[in-house]
Image 1 (spheres, helix red, strand yellow):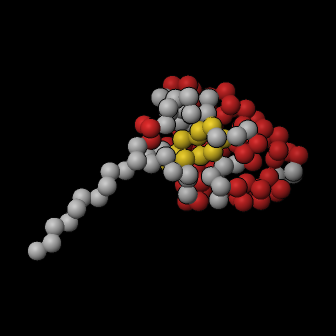
Image 2 (cartoon, rainbow, N blue to C red):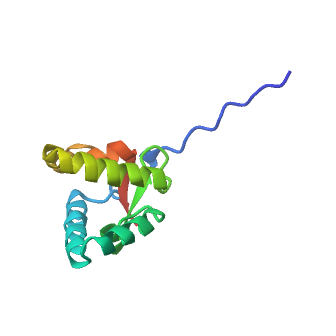
Length: 130
């Protein structure tokens, strides 16, 4: 009879200090920079650039501003699946269909302890400074 060892406990995001989290202001700045980059690249350039950067757990503006997206439970870099959930489902679908979600997300950046917006909850992510 073999005894199974319990799985190791997950690495906690609590190890990330509040000073490592990207500030609400820098996150809003990144969102505005992403909008500017969308306009300048006629959206298609930004879209391709963005999809390429999802492998690095970031977006064009976050990359330029030194931010990255990590798993909210483990602190590991966000996976492609998490980035798609966060960016496509969270921001493009939910955020654009229901403008109130975007406004609520702005408030949530200051009101939640890990500075998470609605799309962060959808993708199970947090944004940190590199």
